[in-house]
Image (cartoon, rainbow, N blue to C red; front, side):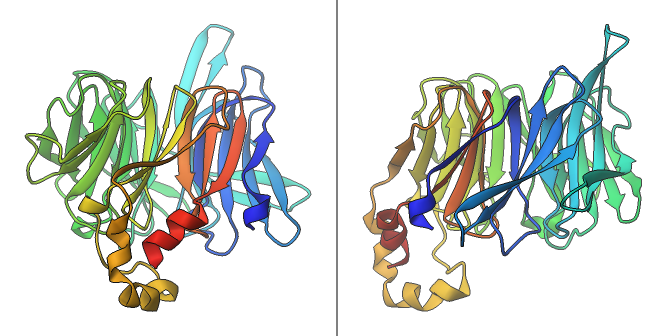
Length: 362
């Protein structure tokens, strides 16, 4: 596997939306949505064939126009959602969000529409699938409201709430803790945490960044811990019980930071920015100490001290892009493998080096 990576693949159209196929646990798989003004947009399903070293590409025609955001269900390999827009009658911009099922055959793949999730909003910024304990749930974030949906054979609205009209939201993430009852929303310079049982805001991080917050992510192993990034070139780490100041701040990009993602090994964090860089951070001082996978449990017990021997901060910078990196994602099948996507349609698959991996698990 290591001799296959990094793997660079060029996509014909501009792109900015990327996610792992979360419901696939055996094959390294990523989804990418294209952005073309012509009616030929697709959702690419890339699958890495480790035996033959090939990156297989299945193209699903996306008849709703440009894909601005793509998300996949962690509970079903076939369920995805997209946020999209297209120009109608040459002058009107029509935006929306749709839930799809990946169907058809390998020769004739198709997106089967299950339902529209655009209610209460003129523009949908992001969709997010429910975490463990919230199977069949989906949230959509629009300019004016947050909506929770029930998804099975069709799509039904569950509940919604109006959002403050300060500015357009930029990101949405579902908290894997709190029994799956909380989501985080980035808007302007602020972060708002909403309880999905009451659809009310419970926590506000005012001025989390000095400029627009572009993304947030929750620590998968430690409750209350969260990462954010933004236009101030900063990546910040927070304890949501103490919102007055961040626990840590890093300035490892020279331009906007568009995406931040925790690894299951929560001392590892990946960021991507408009400076064309992908950065791997080590935040061992804020990480959990519990083993994450059964295969590595015995190694961890024998070598507990190894985790904190790496330096805090930047572990590695990856420079395989020549344009703004809008998205990064960890594989759901291999926790050490990740993908990054830049605006020019360049998809890069890469892997955490053996030296870093062994310093964590040994």
